[in-house]
Length: 362
Image (cartoon, rainbow, N blue to C red):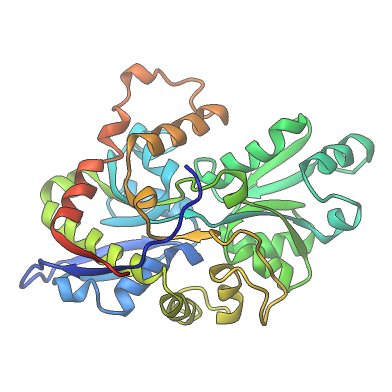
């Protein structure tokens, strides 16, 4: 999955449902990468397709996981690995789920405390030296939002080449994204890998320094998925397609300057992130403006592109391989598990796209 040139696209939908009074509860965690879902709601893209969507803000991925498992959400914004964890019953009641749409690529970063930065830690190699040469009262501790999240996989990828081993050398703690910056500032953790805006927030507050961006660590990695239960897809197939189409329309808008400005304004409201739009824009536009943050990769957030949104076998295999490298599949007999293609549903994505009209803009 390499770099790319963005395409300007216009999107027109061809279908809707009439007299649909059933509420569709879609869960999300307040992060910048929920932007396509937020825009689809606030700009009426769900509504014009006849969908009655109730967005449910959740504190973290454990809440999303549990509410999907117990049927309290019809759909959710979720890390790609969580779709497999639910479907395979890893650390949760088994609830077969599918994704017909991947929401974004990239969007994460690794941040360390100001104390570590001032001690000379500027990358994973210097972190390894710090661990080996400095005596501490406790091991260094890094936060991730979920064991099955891309953030966990990326953090391990960053540490692995320099022989940093979780357990003996460093502790990894699961925390909701919204608590990362405050826990770093209080000294409860020494660093973390998380999505935006919680890297920017640590920098803005003077508590942390960003050392790595996921767009550089693993360019175009799959990040979040729109997940639904297998039973919801079976019983509400057409509604599922319309949901994907609405989010896809919003994702295309998120690849324009105007769309990103509108996303930042919407996400800044208390119903979503509740922080200033300037801070949200720092990662959406990768330019140092009114905030103290400057990201280096112009593809830090990617919401729409043929290589991003389709849940194909390449992205499924990347996710499963990362789970295996993290030791999350050590006691699992893969021969007894549903095949990846039954979870990452390229066919659903293609059907949703076939029912729309796409026109390239020069």
